[in-house]
Image (cartoon, rainbow, N blue to C red; front, side, top):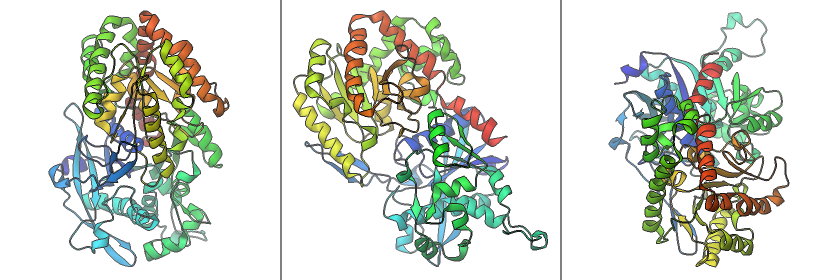
Length: 563
Protein backbone atom coordinates (compact mmCIF):
# COMPACT_ATOMS: atom_id res chain seq x y z
CA UNK A 1 0.00 0.00 0.00
CA UNK A 2 2.76 2.45 0.92
CA UNK A 3 4.50 1.79 -2.40
CA UNK A 4 1.67 3.75 -4.02
CA UNK A 5 2.83 6.84 -2.16
CA UNK A 6 6.60 6.40 -1.94
CA UNK A 7 7.22 6.18 -5.68
CA UNK A 8 7.05 9.98 -6.13
CA UNK A 9 8.88 12.80 -4.35
CA UNK A 10 6.51 14.61 -2.01
CA UNK A 11 5.96 17.62 0.18
CA UNK A 12 5.94 16.55 3.83
CA UNK A 13 3.24 18.52 5.63
CA UNK A 14 3.69 18.52 9.42
CA UNK A 15 0.86 19.56 11.71
CA UNK A 16 0.21 18.77 15.39
CA UNK A 17 -3.49 18.33 14.55
CA UNK A 18 -5.38 17.37 11.41
CA UNK A 19 -9.15 17.01 11.00
CA UNK A 20 -9.24 13.76 9.06
CA UNK A 21 -12.77 12.47 9.55
CA UNK A 22 -15.90 13.55 11.42
CA UNK A 23 -15.55 10.47 13.62
CA UNK A 24 -11.93 11.03 14.63
CA UNK A 25 -11.03 13.59 17.36
CA UNK A 26 -7.56 14.25 15.93
CA UNK A 27 -8.02 18.03 15.95
CA UNK A 28 -8.76 20.76 18.48
CA UNK A 29 -9.96 23.61 16.30
CA UNK A 30 -9.25 25.81 13.33
CA UNK A 31 -5.61 24.81 12.85
CA UNK A 32 -6.54 21.15 12.45
CA UNK A 33 -9.58 21.86 10.30
CA UNK A 34 -7.43 23.97 7.99
CA UNK A 35 -4.88 21.15 7.80
CA UNK A 36 -7.58 18.73 6.74
CA UNK A 37 -8.85 21.10 4.05
CA UNK A 38 -5.26 21.63 2.89
CA UNK A 39 -4.80 17.92 2.30
CA UNK A 40 -8.17 17.53 0.60
CA UNK A 41 -7.36 20.25 -1.88
CA UNK A 42 -3.86 18.82 -2.39
CA UNK A 43 -5.55 15.58 -3.35
CA UNK A 44 -8.04 17.29 -5.66
CA UNK A 45 -5.21 19.14 -7.40
CA UNK A 46 -2.99 16.03 -7.59
CA UNK A 47 -0.25 17.66 -5.52
CA UNK A 48 2.12 15.03 -4.06
CA UNK A 49 1.91 15.46 -0.27
CA UNK A 50 2.44 13.23 2.74
CA UNK A 51 1.19 14.50 6.08
CA UNK A 52 2.69 13.80 9.49
CA UNK A 53 0.81 14.25 12.77
CA UNK A 54 0.25 12.51 16.12
CA UNK A 55 -2.25 9.74 16.79
CA UNK A 56 -3.81 11.58 19.76
CA UNK A 57 -5.67 8.45 20.87
CA UNK A 58 -7.53 10.30 23.63
CA UNK A 59 -8.46 13.19 21.35
CA UNK A 60 -8.68 16.75 22.60
CA UNK A 61 -11.76 16.50 24.80
CA UNK A 62 -15.51 16.09 24.68
CA UNK A 63 -17.31 19.09 26.09
CA UNK A 64 -20.09 18.71 28.65
CA UNK A 65 -22.10 21.77 29.73
CA UNK A 66 -24.50 21.81 32.66
CA UNK A 67 -27.60 23.98 33.03
CA UNK A 68 -25.53 26.87 34.43
CA UNK A 69 -23.16 26.81 31.48
CA UNK A 70 -20.26 25.23 33.36
CA UNK A 71 -17.95 23.32 31.03
CA UNK A 72 -16.37 20.05 32.02
CA UNK A 73 -14.09 17.93 29.85
CA UNK A 74 -13.96 14.18 29.35
CA UNK A 75 -11.63 12.17 27.12
CA UNK A 76 -12.75 11.51 23.56
CA UNK A 77 -10.89 8.28 22.74
CA UNK A 78 -10.68 6.51 19.43
CA UNK A 79 -9.02 3.32 18.21
CA UNK A 80 -6.63 3.83 15.28
CA UNK A 81 -6.93 0.16 14.38
CA UNK A 82 -10.53 0.73 13.27
CA UNK A 83 -9.71 3.46 10.75
CA UNK A 84 -6.07 3.02 9.73
CA UNK A 85 -3.43 0.44 8.93
CA UNK A 86 -0.24 -0.04 10.98
CA UNK A 87 2.98 1.39 9.58
CA UNK A 88 5.60 -1.27 8.77
CA UNK A 89 8.39 0.61 10.55
CA UNK A 90 9.43 1.96 13.93
CA UNK A 91 11.97 4.62 14.78
CA UNK A 92 13.44 5.83 18.06
CA UNK A 93 13.97 9.25 19.62
CA UNK A 94 15.90 9.95 22.81
CA UNK A 95 13.79 11.37 25.63
CA UNK A 96 15.20 11.88 29.13
CA UNK A 97 18.20 9.73 28.29
CA UNK A 98 16.33 6.69 27.04
CA UNK A 99 15.12 5.54 23.63
CA UNK A 100 11.40 6.00 23.03
CA UNK A 101 10.05 3.94 20.17
CA UNK A 102 7.69 5.57 17.70
CA UNK A 103 5.36 3.53 15.55
CA UNK A 104 2.35 4.76 13.71
CA UNK A 105 -0.60 4.36 11.45
CA UNK A 106 -1.44 5.13 7.83
CA UNK A 107 -4.67 6.99 7.21
CA UNK A 108 -5.68 7.55 3.60
CA UNK A 109 -7.47 10.88 3.39
CA UNK A 110 -9.83 10.46 0.49
CA UNK A 111 -11.50 13.26 -1.38
CA UNK A 112 -14.87 12.88 -3.09
CA UNK A 113 -13.15 11.28 -6.09
CA UNK A 114 -10.66 8.43 -6.32
CA UNK A 115 -7.41 10.04 -5.17
CA UNK A 116 -6.14 10.11 -1.60
CA UNK A 117 -3.34 11.57 0.48
CA UNK A 118 -1.27 9.54 2.95
CA UNK A 119 -1.32 10.72 6.55
CA UNK A 120 1.11 9.24 9.08
CA UNK A 121 -0.16 9.28 12.66
CA UNK A 122 2.82 8.81 14.97
CA UNK A 123 2.16 6.70 18.05
CA UNK A 124 4.29 5.86 21.11
CA UNK A 125 1.74 3.48 22.62
CA UNK A 126 4.02 0.49 22.11
CA UNK A 127 4.76 -2.35 24.49
CA UNK A 128 8.51 -1.71 24.33
CA UNK A 129 8.04 1.77 25.88
CA UNK A 130 7.64 2.68 29.53
CA UNK A 131 4.06 3.42 30.62
CA UNK A 132 4.72 7.17 30.79
CA UNK A 133 6.26 7.12 27.31
CA UNK A 134 3.30 5.25 25.87
CA UNK A 135 1.17 8.26 26.82
CA UNK A 136 3.21 10.88 24.91
CA UNK A 137 1.00 10.79 21.83
CA UNK A 138 -2.28 10.20 23.68
CA UNK A 139 -3.64 13.66 24.55
CA UNK A 140 -3.74 16.45 21.98
CA UNK A 141 -2.29 19.57 23.64
CA UNK A 142 -2.46 17.84 26.99
CA UNK A 143 -0.25 17.94 30.05
CA UNK A 144 2.43 20.41 31.07
CA UNK A 145 5.38 21.96 29.25
CA UNK A 146 7.49 18.81 29.64
CA UNK A 147 4.74 16.71 28.08
CA UNK A 148 4.33 19.18 25.21
CA UNK A 149 8.10 19.18 24.59
CA UNK A 150 8.07 15.39 24.37
CA UNK A 151 5.22 15.52 21.87
CA UNK A 152 7.05 18.00 19.69
CA UNK A 153 10.21 15.87 19.75
CA UNK A 154 8.17 12.91 18.52
CA UNK A 155 6.49 15.01 15.84
CA UNK A 156 9.59 16.78 14.54
CA UNK A 157 12.50 14.39 15.04
CA UNK A 158 10.38 11.23 14.94
CA UNK A 159 8.42 12.41 11.91
CA UNK A 160 11.49 12.96 9.73
CA UNK A 161 12.96 9.63 10.82
CA UNK A 162 9.71 7.82 10.09
CA UNK A 163 9.45 9.28 6.59
CA UNK A 164 12.99 8.12 5.92
CA UNK A 165 12.34 4.65 7.36
CA UNK A 166 9.28 4.21 5.15
CA UNK A 167 11.14 5.20 2.00
CA UNK A 168 9.54 8.57 1.28
CA UNK A 169 11.48 11.02 -0.84
CA UNK A 170 10.77 14.54 0.41
CA UNK A 171 11.65 17.65 -1.58
CA UNK A 172 10.01 20.17 0.77
CA UNK A 173 9.01 20.18 4.45
CA UNK A 174 6.04 22.37 5.37
CA UNK A 175 5.62 23.28 9.05
CA UNK A 176 2.01 24.17 9.84
CA UNK A 177 2.73 26.27 12.96
CA UNK A 178 5.87 25.93 15.06
CA UNK A 179 5.02 22.68 16.84
CA UNK A 180 7.04 20.65 14.33
CA UNK A 181 10.12 22.91 14.15
CA UNK A 182 12.40 20.18 15.50
CA UNK A 183 12.18 18.63 12.04
CA UNK A 184 14.66 21.29 10.94
CA UNK A 185 17.02 20.31 13.75
CA UNK A 186 16.92 16.72 12.49
CA UNK A 187 17.64 17.93 8.96
CA UNK A 188 20.63 19.92 10.22
CA UNK A 189 21.99 16.77 11.83
CA UNK A 190 21.71 15.00 8.50
CA UNK A 191 23.20 17.81 6.43
CA UNK A 192 26.54 18.44 8.08
CA UNK A 193 29.37 19.86 6.05
CA UNK A 194 32.26 17.39 5.71
CA UNK A 195 35.22 18.35 7.88
CA UNK A 196 37.55 18.81 4.91
CA UNK A 197 35.16 21.42 3.46
CA UNK A 198 34.66 23.53 6.57
CA UNK A 199 37.57 25.88 5.78
CA UNK A 200 37.12 28.09 8.81
CA UNK A 201 33.32 28.09 8.87
CA UNK A 202 31.71 28.92 12.21
CA UNK A 203 29.25 26.05 11.95
CA UNK A 204 29.48 22.53 10.58
CA UNK A 205 25.81 22.61 9.55
CA UNK A 206 24.59 23.34 6.05
CA UNK A 207 21.96 25.83 7.17
CA UNK A 208 21.24 27.23 3.65
CA UNK A 209 20.45 23.76 2.37
CA UNK A 210 18.09 23.04 5.26
CA UNK A 211 16.38 26.41 4.87
CA UNK A 212 15.85 25.67 1.20
CA UNK A 213 14.07 22.47 2.17
CA UNK A 214 11.67 24.10 4.66
CA UNK A 215 8.71 26.44 4.62
CA UNK A 216 6.74 27.67 7.60
CA UNK A 217 3.19 28.93 8.04
CA UNK A 218 2.62 30.95 11.19
CA UNK A 219 -0.96 31.21 12.45
CA UNK A 220 -0.83 33.32 15.56
CA UNK A 221 -0.23 37.06 15.96
CA UNK A 222 -0.11 36.57 19.75
CA UNK A 223 3.26 36.21 21.50
CA UNK A 224 1.65 34.16 24.27
CA UNK A 225 0.47 31.63 21.70
CA UNK A 226 4.00 30.52 20.83
CA UNK A 227 5.49 27.41 22.42
CA UNK A 228 8.51 28.20 24.58
CA UNK A 229 10.68 25.83 26.57
CA UNK A 230 13.32 26.59 29.18
CA UNK A 231 16.74 25.46 28.01
CA UNK A 232 17.32 23.55 31.23
CA UNK A 233 14.22 21.52 30.47
CA UNK A 234 15.32 21.08 26.85
CA UNK A 235 18.69 19.70 27.95
CA UNK A 236 17.03 17.33 30.45
CA UNK A 237 14.52 15.98 27.93
CA UNK A 238 16.45 16.03 24.64
CA UNK A 239 19.88 15.01 25.92
CA UNK A 240 22.75 14.88 23.48
CA UNK A 241 20.75 14.15 20.32
CA UNK A 242 20.76 17.90 19.59
CA UNK A 243 23.46 20.56 19.60
CA UNK A 244 22.73 22.68 22.68
CA UNK A 245 25.20 25.34 21.57
CA UNK A 246 23.37 25.72 18.26
CA UNK A 247 19.80 25.93 19.55
CA UNK A 248 20.10 29.38 21.20
CA UNK A 249 21.48 30.76 17.94
CA UNK A 250 18.36 29.60 16.10
CA UNK A 251 15.57 29.64 18.68
CA UNK A 252 16.32 32.57 20.98
CA UNK A 253 18.74 33.11 23.84
CA UNK A 254 16.29 33.35 26.75
CA UNK A 255 14.35 30.18 26.02
CA UNK A 256 13.66 27.88 23.11
CA UNK A 257 10.95 29.57 21.05
CA UNK A 258 9.51 27.12 18.52
CA UNK A 259 8.26 29.92 16.27
CA UNK A 260 11.71 31.49 16.23
CA UNK A 261 13.26 28.10 15.47
CA UNK A 262 10.87 27.56 12.55
CA UNK A 263 11.62 31.02 11.20
CA UNK A 264 15.38 30.45 11.39
CA UNK A 265 15.12 27.16 9.53
CA UNK A 266 12.72 28.16 6.73
CA UNK A 267 13.41 29.94 3.46
CA UNK A 268 9.72 30.65 2.83
CA UNK A 269 7.55 32.04 5.63
CA UNK A 270 3.94 33.10 5.32
CA UNK A 271 1.06 34.47 7.31
CA UNK A 272 -2.51 33.38 6.70
CA UNK A 273 -4.06 36.69 5.58
CA UNK A 274 -2.72 39.94 4.19
CA UNK A 275 -3.24 41.74 7.50
CA UNK A 276 -1.69 38.87 9.45
CA UNK A 277 1.42 38.96 7.26
CA UNK A 278 1.77 42.67 8.07
CA UNK A 279 1.46 41.99 11.80
CA UNK A 280 3.81 39.00 11.68
CA UNK A 281 6.39 41.02 9.73
CA UNK A 282 6.50 43.53 12.58
CA UNK A 283 6.68 40.77 15.19
CA UNK A 284 9.59 39.06 13.42
CA UNK A 285 11.84 41.81 12.04
CA UNK A 286 14.45 40.53 9.64
CA UNK A 287 12.18 37.90 8.10
CA UNK A 288 10.20 38.29 4.92
CA UNK A 289 6.65 37.15 5.75
CA UNK A 290 4.54 36.46 2.67
CA UNK A 291 0.74 36.46 2.66
CA UNK A 292 -1.24 33.42 1.55
CA UNK A 293 -4.76 33.89 2.81
CA UNK A 294 -6.44 30.75 4.11
CA UNK A 295 -9.26 29.02 2.31
CA UNK A 296 -11.73 26.20 2.95
CA UNK A 297 -12.40 23.04 0.98
CA UNK A 298 -15.29 23.62 -1.44
CA UNK A 299 -16.97 20.21 -1.34
CA UNK A 300 -16.29 19.59 2.35
CA UNK A 301 -18.07 22.74 3.55
CA UNK A 302 -20.92 23.03 1.07
CA UNK A 303 -24.20 21.58 2.32
CA UNK A 304 -25.94 18.99 0.16
CA UNK A 305 -28.73 21.32 -1.07
CA UNK A 306 -26.12 23.74 -2.42
CA UNK A 307 -23.98 20.94 -3.87
CA UNK A 308 -27.01 19.82 -5.86
CA UNK A 309 -27.75 23.37 -6.96
CA UNK A 310 -24.16 24.07 -8.01
CA UNK A 311 -23.85 20.72 -9.80
CA UNK A 312 -26.91 21.56 -11.87
CA UNK A 313 -25.98 25.10 -12.87
CA UNK A 314 -22.19 25.30 -12.36
CA UNK A 315 -20.82 21.84 -13.20
CA UNK A 316 -17.22 21.40 -12.11
CA UNK A 317 -17.50 23.99 -9.32
CA UNK A 318 -15.92 21.75 -6.68
CA UNK A 319 -12.79 21.36 -8.84
CA UNK A 320 -12.85 24.95 -10.10
CA UNK A 321 -14.51 26.95 -7.32
CA UNK A 322 -13.81 30.14 -9.25
CA UNK A 323 -16.84 29.12 -11.35
CA UNK A 324 -18.94 30.23 -8.39
CA UNK A 325 -18.11 33.77 -9.47
CA UNK A 326 -20.84 33.30 -12.10
CA UNK A 327 -23.48 32.30 -9.55
CA UNK A 328 -25.22 35.68 -9.59
CA UNK A 329 -25.87 35.22 -13.32
CA UNK A 330 -26.64 31.48 -13.43
CA UNK A 331 -28.54 30.91 -10.16
CA UNK A 332 -32.01 32.27 -9.55
CA UNK A 333 -32.84 33.84 -6.18
CA UNK A 334 -35.68 31.34 -5.80
CA UNK A 335 -33.28 28.39 -6.19
CA UNK A 336 -30.92 29.87 -3.61
CA UNK A 337 -33.80 30.48 -1.19
CA UNK A 338 -35.00 26.90 -1.63
CA UNK A 339 -31.53 25.53 -0.82
CA UNK A 340 -31.30 27.87 2.16
CA UNK A 341 -34.66 26.61 3.53
CA UNK A 342 -33.45 23.01 3.47
CA UNK A 343 -30.28 24.01 5.34
CA UNK A 344 -32.29 26.01 7.88
CA UNK A 345 -34.60 23.07 8.50
CA UNK A 346 -31.65 20.73 9.10
CA UNK A 347 -30.18 23.09 11.69
CA UNK A 348 -33.54 23.69 13.37
CA UNK A 349 -34.05 19.94 13.73
CA UNK A 350 -30.63 19.50 15.37
CA UNK A 351 -31.14 22.49 17.69
CA UNK A 352 -34.49 21.10 18.85
CA UNK A 353 -33.00 17.64 19.41
CA UNK A 354 -30.00 18.89 21.37
CA UNK A 355 -31.44 21.81 23.34
CA UNK A 356 -35.24 21.73 23.14
CA UNK A 357 -35.21 25.24 21.62
CA UNK A 358 -37.68 25.61 18.75
CA UNK A 359 -36.32 27.97 16.11
CA UNK A 360 -38.84 30.19 14.35
CA UNK A 361 -38.58 29.88 10.53
CA UNK A 362 -39.84 33.45 10.18
CA UNK A 363 -36.90 34.89 12.14
CA UNK A 364 -33.36 35.26 10.81
CA UNK A 365 -30.80 33.25 12.76
CA UNK A 366 -27.54 34.84 13.86
CA UNK A 367 -24.77 32.26 14.24
CA UNK A 368 -21.64 32.46 16.38
CA UNK A 369 -19.45 29.39 16.80
CA UNK A 370 -15.73 29.26 17.55
CA UNK A 371 -13.29 28.64 20.38
CA UNK A 372 -14.42 30.53 23.46
CA UNK A 373 -11.57 32.74 24.54
CA UNK A 374 -11.32 36.38 25.54
CA UNK A 375 -9.95 37.87 22.32
CA UNK A 376 -12.78 36.39 20.23
CA UNK A 377 -15.26 38.35 22.43
CA UNK A 378 -18.17 35.86 22.27
CA UNK A 379 -20.10 38.02 24.74
CA UNK A 380 -20.01 41.19 22.61
CA UNK A 381 -23.43 40.40 21.13
CA UNK A 382 -24.85 40.59 24.66
CA UNK A 383 -23.09 43.78 25.72
CA UNK A 384 -26.40 45.67 26.13
CA UNK A 385 -29.34 43.34 26.71
CA UNK A 386 -31.91 46.12 26.82
CA UNK A 387 -30.83 47.44 23.45
CA UNK A 388 -30.83 43.91 22.09
CA UNK A 389 -34.44 43.52 23.27
CA UNK A 390 -35.40 46.81 21.65
CA UNK A 391 -33.92 45.71 18.32
CA UNK A 392 -35.68 42.34 18.54
CA UNK A 393 -39.07 43.95 19.17
CA UNK A 394 -38.76 45.90 15.91
CA UNK A 395 -36.97 43.21 13.91
CA UNK A 396 -37.30 39.73 15.48
CA UNK A 397 -34.29 37.43 15.30
CA UNK A 398 -32.80 34.40 17.08
CA UNK A 399 -29.30 33.26 17.98
CA UNK A 400 -27.49 29.92 17.80
CA UNK A 401 -24.07 29.56 19.43
CA UNK A 402 -21.45 26.87 20.00
CA UNK A 403 -17.83 26.65 21.07
CA UNK A 404 -15.36 25.05 23.44
CA UNK A 405 -12.98 26.72 25.87
CA UNK A 406 -9.52 25.23 26.30
CA UNK A 407 -9.43 23.20 29.53
CA UNK A 408 -6.85 25.61 31.00
CA UNK A 409 -8.65 28.77 29.83
CA UNK A 410 -10.66 29.74 32.90
CA UNK A 411 -11.67 33.05 31.37
CA UNK A 412 -13.01 31.25 28.32
CA UNK A 413 -15.06 28.98 30.57
CA UNK A 414 -16.46 31.98 32.41
CA UNK A 415 -17.54 33.41 29.06
CA UNK A 416 -19.58 30.27 28.35
CA UNK A 417 -21.27 30.69 31.74
CA UNK A 418 -21.91 34.36 30.98
CA UNK A 419 -23.60 33.50 27.69
CA UNK A 420 -25.86 31.06 29.49
CA UNK A 421 -26.85 33.77 31.97
CA UNK A 422 -27.69 36.04 29.05
CA UNK A 423 -29.73 33.24 27.48
CA UNK A 424 -31.77 32.94 30.65
CA UNK A 425 -32.27 36.72 30.86
CA UNK A 426 -33.57 36.82 27.26
CA UNK A 427 -35.86 33.80 27.57
CA UNK A 428 -39.28 34.46 26.11
CA UNK A 429 -38.02 37.44 24.11
CA UNK A 430 -35.11 36.32 21.96
CA UNK A 431 -34.63 32.58 21.35
CA UNK A 432 -31.01 31.64 22.05
CA UNK A 433 -29.61 28.11 21.75
CA UNK A 434 -26.14 26.94 22.80
CA UNK A 435 -25.06 23.65 21.25
CA UNK A 436 -22.42 21.73 23.25
CA UNK A 437 -19.39 19.86 21.93
CA UNK A 438 -18.72 21.92 18.83
CA UNK A 439 -17.14 19.68 16.17
CA UNK A 440 -16.94 19.41 12.39
CA UNK A 441 -20.34 17.78 11.94
CA UNK A 442 -22.02 20.50 13.99
CA UNK A 443 -20.01 23.20 12.22
CA UNK A 444 -21.38 22.05 8.86
CA UNK A 445 -24.93 22.44 10.13
CA UNK A 446 -24.21 25.86 11.60
CA UNK A 447 -22.39 27.49 8.68
CA UNK A 448 -25.14 26.38 6.31
CA UNK A 449 -28.20 26.70 8.55
CA UNK A 450 -27.87 30.20 10.03
CA UNK A 451 -28.70 33.35 8.09
CA UNK A 452 -25.90 35.65 9.27
CA UNK A 453 -22.43 34.61 10.48
CA UNK A 454 -21.28 36.83 13.36
CA UNK A 455 -17.60 37.28 14.21
CA UNK A 456 -16.28 39.71 16.82
CA UNK A 457 -12.50 39.29 17.34
CA UNK A 458 -10.33 41.89 19.02
CA UNK A 459 -8.07 43.26 16.24
CA UNK A 460 -5.39 42.41 15.26
CA UNK A 461 -5.59 39.05 17.05
CA UNK A 462 -7.58 37.17 14.40
CA UNK A 463 -4.85 35.80 12.17
CA UNK A 464 -7.31 34.72 9.50
CA UNK A 465 -10.44 32.87 10.58
CA UNK A 466 -12.20 30.52 8.17
CA UNK A 467 -15.70 29.97 9.54
CA UNK A 468 -17.12 32.89 7.56
CA UNK A 469 -15.59 31.43 4.40
CA UNK A 470 -17.46 28.17 5.05
CA UNK A 471 -20.70 30.08 5.53
CA UNK A 472 -20.20 31.85 2.19
CA UNK A 473 -20.32 28.56 0.27
CA UNK A 474 -23.87 28.20 1.60
CA UNK A 475 -25.03 31.70 0.75
CA UNK A 476 -24.57 33.01 4.31
CA UNK A 477 -23.15 36.55 4.61
CA UNK A 478 -20.89 37.65 7.47
CA UNK A 479 -21.37 40.41 10.03
CA UNK A 480 -17.85 40.83 11.32
CA UNK A 481 -15.23 43.08 12.82
CA UNK A 482 -12.59 43.96 10.21
CA UNK A 483 -9.77 41.59 11.04
CA UNK A 484 -8.13 38.53 9.48
CA UNK A 485 -9.56 37.44 6.14
CA UNK A 486 -12.63 39.69 6.43
CA UNK A 487 -10.53 42.76 5.65
CA UNK A 488 -10.07 41.20 2.20
CA UNK A 489 -13.50 39.57 1.91
CA UNK A 490 -15.79 42.36 3.08
CA UNK A 491 -17.59 44.23 0.32
CA UNK A 492 -19.91 46.08 2.64
CA UNK A 493 -23.56 45.45 1.82
CA UNK A 494 -22.69 42.88 -0.86
CA UNK A 495 -20.86 39.98 0.86
CA UNK A 496 -21.96 40.97 4.34
CA UNK A 497 -21.34 43.88 6.69
CA UNK A 498 -18.39 45.27 8.58
CA UNK A 499 -18.60 46.05 12.28
CA UNK A 500 -16.75 49.32 12.81
CA UNK A 501 -14.10 50.77 10.57
CA UNK A 502 -10.59 49.37 10.19
CA UNK A 503 -8.55 50.67 13.09
CA UNK A 504 -11.62 51.79 15.04
CA UNK A 505 -11.61 51.73 18.85
CA UNK A 506 -12.58 48.19 19.96
CA UNK A 507 -14.65 49.76 22.73
CA UNK A 508 -17.04 51.02 20.03
CA UNK A 509 -17.59 47.64 18.39
CA UNK A 510 -20.55 46.67 20.57
CA UNK A 511 -22.46 49.78 19.56
CA UNK A 512 -21.41 49.32 15.93
CA UNK A 513 -22.66 45.72 15.97
CA UNK A 514 -26.07 46.76 17.24
CA UNK A 515 -26.28 49.65 14.77
CA UNK A 516 -25.59 47.36 11.80
CA UNK A 517 -28.21 44.89 13.01
CA UNK A 518 -30.77 47.62 13.63
CA UNK A 519 -30.26 49.75 10.51
CA UNK A 520 -28.97 47.36 7.85
CA UNK A 521 -29.03 43.62 8.43
CA UNK A 522 -32.43 42.95 9.99
CA UNK A 523 -34.47 45.51 8.01
CA UNK A 524 -33.03 44.08 4.78
CA UNK A 525 -33.92 40.52 5.79
CA UNK A 526 -37.47 41.35 6.84
CA UNK A 527 -38.31 44.05 4.31
CA UNK A 528 -36.40 43.44 1.08
CA UNK A 529 -36.26 39.80 -0.08
CA UNK A 530 -34.67 40.78 -3.38
CA UNK A 531 -31.99 42.78 -1.59
CA UNK A 532 -31.29 39.88 0.77
CA UNK A 533 -30.95 37.53 -2.20
CA UNK A 534 -28.33 39.86 -3.68
CA UNK A 535 -26.29 39.60 -0.47
CA UNK A 536 -26.59 35.81 -0.39
CA UNK A 537 -25.39 35.62 -3.99
CA UNK A 538 -22.68 38.18 -3.23
CA UNK A 539 -21.29 35.90 -0.51
CA UNK A 540 -21.12 33.05 -3.02
CA UNK A 541 -19.75 34.94 -6.00
CA UNK A 542 -17.26 37.21 -4.23
CA UNK A 543 -16.21 35.17 -1.18
CA UNK A 544 -16.67 31.46 -1.88
CA UNK A 545 -15.19 31.81 -5.35
CA UNK A 546 -12.04 33.37 -3.85
CA UNK A 547 -11.54 32.13 -0.30
CA UNK A 548 -11.16 28.42 -0.91
CA UNK A 549 -8.35 25.97 -0.28
CA UNK A 550 -7.89 25.21 -4.00
CA UNK A 551 -6.72 28.78 -4.55
CA UNK A 552 -4.67 28.58 -1.37
CA UNK A 553 -2.91 25.37 -2.42
CA UNK A 554 -2.13 26.70 -5.88
CA UNK A 555 -0.39 29.59 -4.14
CA UNK A 556 1.58 27.24 -1.88
CA UNK A 557 2.55 25.06 -4.84
CA UNK A 558 3.89 27.93 -6.95
CA UNK A 559 5.38 30.13 -4.22
CA UNK A 560 6.50 27.75 -1.46
CA UNK A 561 6.87 24.24 -2.88
CA UNK A 562 8.12 24.64 -6.44
CA UNK A 563 9.86 28.02 -6.31
